[in-house]
Image 1 (cartoon, helix red, strand yellow):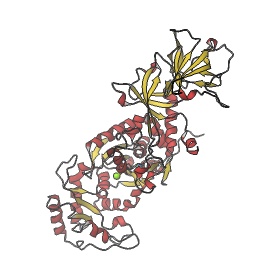
Image 2 (cartoon, protein in one colour; image 1 turned 90 degrees about the horizontal axis):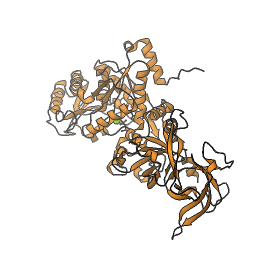
Image 3 (cartoon, protein in one colour; image 1 turned 180 degrees about the vertical axis):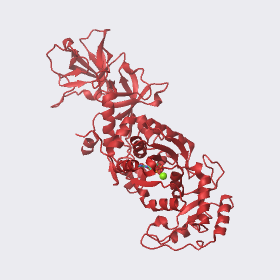
Image 4 (cartoon, helix red, strand yellow; image 1 turned 60 degrees about the vertical axis):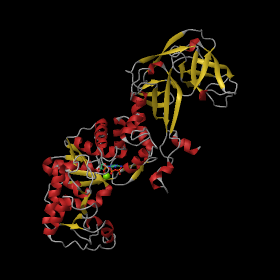
Length: 554
Ligand code: ATP
Ligand code: MG
């Protein structure tokens, strides 16, 4: 079997271009986020692709903030984006901002006007739309299309100088109002926006449109392969038109299918609504599909990179099951996380034949998947706590946990048999009484007894109180954006369940924010940042198995 991994279609293109000496054998990609929100799992696909392909074939990647819309952009977003990319494990060659190029872009626009290839249009947005035509019908020329070069130059200067109000004028490329490609029907290049920009302040009141900024920024940076998502395929002729008419570096655009994930939304505009309207606690709420949310939830950079790799790169749109993302983090944490016992819903258990006041120290494996991970001490005594759901007053068939007369093994400890139970005044089970078998100790069991079930537990006196946050899908339907009405009406009301009376084994005491564990039988968990200075709080990253599909069928 070949050990070489198969290349996706973009890797094939890049490999060939580098080999053939196109661009002088140089390879420079860029990742171009607009700083108008936090990065999400969709972006990580683009990041892994842009940085990954460069790494693979000896190139580099620029981080470029596509900050041409002053109204929605903010430095908070710039900082979070840099943090997230670095956390994912990638290094950019340079950080640039489209706004660094505002002067050059302005000069490019003047150059097009001078060539008779751009004009100032006084039409309103509605008037422009009305003359645009439809995909099957050609558009009509604007009455301002035949302005002289001198008039256009003078008006464009006055636009820049702030002599006009927002929307009063725009600069358009003069291409072809009858083009079958709507993007070539005299697309807008500049609009007037009297708005403060997060970097250029009040220097500008005209801002370039995406189409005029993006390709030119690529060319200014000598980007060789400009990789973007499929919806920009129809923009490519325009991308090439500007570069050609301005005689700039021949950057080339390539498209791939964006990543969609079920049970969530991925547009920054929608994610911002969830934040602003407090449906979540913030951009890094562990239920969010943002990189910061996933990080806080307990995802590792390795698991996200593995996910991007598994999803692959293609030119066909599809929706990926979130189960694949969960599979990737389980694989990682199974190998790399420490084990611990935490009882989420505690029920007291008394071992009536165990000496009062005695505590013994048992041994548990830190991680059975990793022989170098060592062991931990687990105290054991007469009084323990087990999970409420591991006890039943009456055992049904094939029930292998605790019920009067039944035996189970306490993980890393002894086999016990349930003898009786105590109820409180309202009839709830309060305490379970058991007998233990001293010869059945894990690791040195000579009892000859068989217990079918193994349950987790904590010792009553040494257990530490912890809070556990159980997360579920943020939305109750696969594709909230395609449903009728407001996508927010499909939020899953049970996406967070807080268990504040949980008890953890004492080895957890010094766990730090971000530390990851497998809680036996319960799933993978990590310490939340809300723990600082108080009780330890654990986020459930994922349950141990995919119970979702099963639950849906119930
Ligand atoms: P959104 O629609 O979520 O606001 P966007 O495309 O406007 O996303 P940008 O900040 O412009 O977000 O995106 C930066 C880069 O990431 C672009 O190259 C974009 O194509 C890519 N990207 C954004 N969303 C996805 C996705 N779901 N899958 C793959 N790539 C994506
Ligand atoms: Mg965008």
